[in-house]
Amino acid sequence: MYGQMLLILTKSVNRCFEKNPKFDMAPLLGGTDAVFLSLIRAFSWNPATFLHAYTCLPLAQATRQAASTVLQDIADSGVLFALLMCDHKVISLVGAQKATLHPDDILLLANFILSSESFRTSESFSPICLPRYNPMAFLYAYVHFFDENTYLTLLTPRSDAFFDLKDSRARIQDVLLKSNVLLEVQRSLHENVLRVEDVPIDPTSQSTSAPAQSSQGLNSQPLSSDEAIGGPAGLWHFIYKSVYLDQYVSSEFALPIRNPKQQKRLYKAYQKVYASMHDKATGPHKTQFRRTEDYVLSWITQDFELYAAFSPLADKTQAIKICNRVCQWIRDLEDRVFIYGESTIAW
Image 1 (cartoon, rainbow, N blue to C red):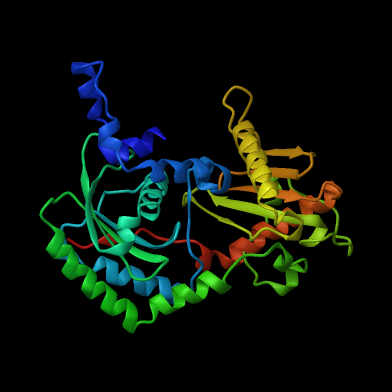
Image 2 (tube, rainbow, N blue to C red; image 1 turned 135 degrees about the vertical axis):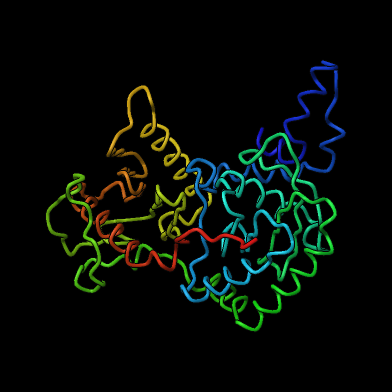
């Protein structure tokens, strides 16, 4: 919440309070109620709020590369960061050399844009602050929605860059249309979802990549053929975070937890497990099992974090085996669900 306030005002607002302790900043935040209400709601449904990672829209590698290439080709516009997003999911992200965009800034920026109706109705040029990048200074965000879900954000330190960025956007849009990127984005939005029902239980059905890291401690007995409602061994949901990439993927909710109240309860369980796993006083831990109304398993290694929810009746040994399967499955899909490699803008 503090970061969202800084995005709108910058940390320099502190000087106003130092000069006048009775300073009222409410007028400066006028019209932003929807932004903060949207962020409060995100605490109950968006894993990015506690994972400090962002998620990508699943796309074929060639499609994502086409999007990245056109975003890189804006050398004369002075852009620090260029993001192509679909709702809260990143399609492509490029930055100037030695400039990195923190996942928390992506979360706050996307929340600000998606909860402000003015961005959707016309192309916008607005001062914003990225708290993790520089909490004391404004950048300027050019925002344009290509359709209801897909939008481009170009961030620059130049306050006079609107028309240059408008021209850049036109060129980007032309290439995205000709290369069918926007069409593939809409197709992915409705078709490319991860379902626990699709988790492979036969390792021979997947491509041969690195095996699940048995040295990390998740070994178990072979799977039984019994399956509960949802995925194999009663798997209801999972979140997989790549530690190195600061990106995560999550499955669709299975039938037993389609109710919003149940989903909210599950995310709270994930938050508690995450906090416990990363507790500096007692941890960090490698694995944790919690058998509650939603049986939650957590597994952390140097490379990834996995949070999985099973039926309370699930067998622990079978659940461990399925967690190995999920990790292997994500590795097989990593070119589609993650952005690999740093894309930089050629100045």
